[in-house]
Amino acid sequence: MLRAVIFDFDGVIVDSEALHLRSFNRVLARYGVEITTKDYYQDYLGLTDLDCFKLLIDKGKLKLNPSQIEELLKDKNREFERLARTQAHTIEGVPEFLQMLKQNNIPMAIYSGALLEEIELMLKQSNLRYFFEVIVSAEDVEKSKPDPEGFLLALEKLNRRRPLAQTPQNSSTEKKENPIMPNECVVIEDSHWGLEAAKAAGMHTVAITNSYDAEQLRAAEKTITKLSELKIDDLQRLCV
Image (cartoon, rainbow, N blue to C red; front, side, top):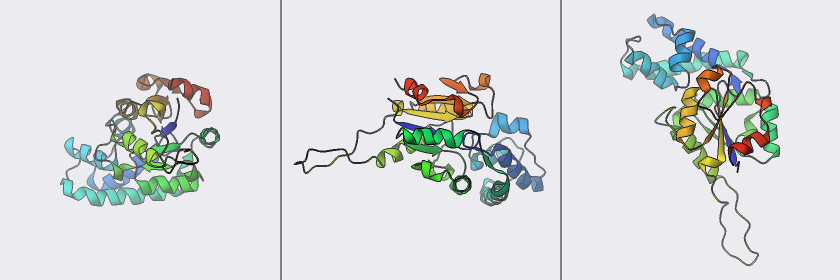
């Protein structure tokens, strides 16, 4: 039974991956470092900003002490916010898909490696914030994708918000609905890191080919090119 849908954000809700890459490169330029588009999609997309900088240091491309990363994170966030205010846009079909889930009373959450401030900014700009009960962002997790921590945390937070169940009229006890289980959740992702994380969390997976081709997303149970291809019955069937 389908009881919740958890979304990745960049590349699924908002077309913003290219803005993240530009923001990284504007910050890294002062150190003579550039991430190519090929390398970004191969090695860095799906990671938190912190893990991206750490990986650059580990690869020997960025000659910095890890203690200096905090300032880089602040600078990258400022660059991204400036770009996002004018250039980020909602991916085609997203509002209609979210409305379909809402009409079917399906709770929705976001788990993203982006910062909460960035997610909130773009959701506010696109008037989509009210669809999502829960947002789990980079600040909330110790391990980024492909670790399942973020998806499990999103589910835990959704369950904390479950309404009280109906009780007999003369009963003095109140209890919440049965908790949503991982196998009652569908995750919509655009990267293999995200698909690995969702599967490790015991959730069902849909891949959308906004960032990678279908071959690179073959781990998904269902692959689509746009959200308008996905109907509520498709999601229900995944959870049977």
